[in-house]
Length: 202
Ligand code: AMP
Image (cartoon, rainbow, N blue to C red):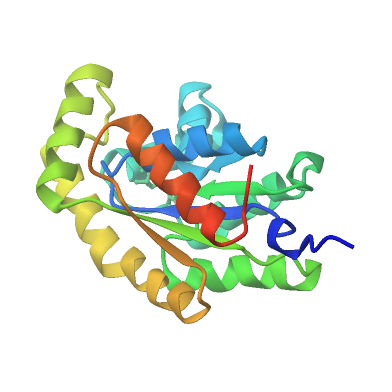
């Protein structure tokens, strides 16, 4: 009988990295390769702002200033999204959890379902590279939260509140650290290889 344990880990993934690390782009690519939904809380909020929903009006000024939306509100959105049928074979989270409190909320949702995260992709990018990529994106996309002030605040929040979640996941032994500097395809290949080494294969 063949041993299928090496290929049996479902891709329940989280991608973490500072703003400008390319996590949105790489997350979308990895999700597509694995045929799982990429769930970005930032994208969900931006869609609400764009569609001028009540929630969008509530969170617009917070997002534009580079601050975080409340843990409860963000988690409520995420829980609804994770409860949809297309997450059965796996999912890739981008942007949640962003602090230790959110990590606890996510755990309290996934643990009773017996569906813990199977890998956390940590994209390593030096601060100067993040800043120059964000400034470039500001020129191209004109995102309201890509002003110098909002960028600085978001990087500060990342270092203070988000980076510590990696320590917790490291203790769980599920972090794949990947060098995020280089061509898009090269970084994607590195991530796929790192996941493969953990038994998470396309
Ligand atoms: P992102 O695209 O992930 O950089 O998210 C853009 C903005 O959406 C953030 O700066 C926050 O204002 C908000 N946001 C996204 N995810 C979260 C989260 N997990 N908790 C709180 N706010 C969030």
